[in-house]
Image 1 (tube, rainbow, N blue to C red):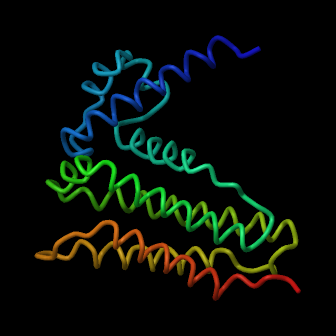
Image 2: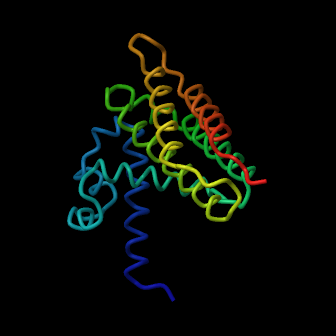
Length: 195
């Protein structure tokens, strides 16, 4: 039987997520305040602050929620890893395509890069976690996952930086595709399957 507090927390999170999604369709995500998020979700500020330090931390929580929506399989083979990476980027591309108003609202501020920095951090962390799991299972050769993380982080940041050059039209789907290809290429080069 589920604890009443667990149900209450789940309902609070669901209300905040739903309200956040509506608010970021109307205005840049960096402009969403805790007060208006709580008002829209009908959640007290005290309740909000018992779970999150500020709106930025909630934004990171929202990204983790999106990650959970991808339903990574965390399979037992390197092929599973590549399939999951491809699926995750396909989800991101579909999310951006299905919600253009989020991007239009976000593009009105310079802080969209913060969102993609947080997203790239999430991508790198998930890839490293997955690779560590495959190492633990004995599927791939032991390696320095910090090295993989550094290459991925630098690559993702470079792609994001190239996407947001001044005076250049922003093509987010292309950025997602380039990031996916880069992630797969770096992983394919550095992660060696055990024979």
